Image (cartoon, rainbow, N blue to C red; front, side):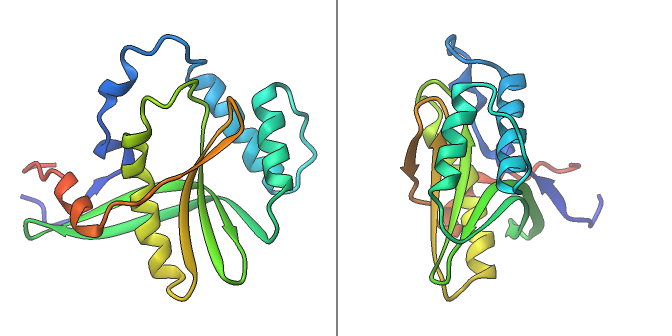
Length: 171
């Protein structure tokens, strides 16, 4: 058995079953396109808005004062059953002000069917960012690009995250 850390992503903690019966989605390719646009727009690149989702992302980002940091790597080391596990992911956007750090995740979903699963993802990011900015208020939210709604998410505790991680011998 290897003594190296076990790796997970926030998505490995999520139940993919919430996506199975959804028919009105626009697909992974569309989601990637919107995320790529959002990253480049937040970086200040001159990018063309090609659809209403991108228009809503641009309008949203234009309203945010402070520093925008798109596509930030996040690594959360935790111990599960005596084993070191690292959960790694990419935060869509960190919005920093002098008092606050907002963790924002873009979702191109046409409904709210997966919000409870996305809470797991945002919880990982919350605990990473809380360690980096211990003196600032940390918030987590989803920005739904389909309608421009921003939904605040209450993150899970660290103990709840540990319980979500399943250790599989031989991983």
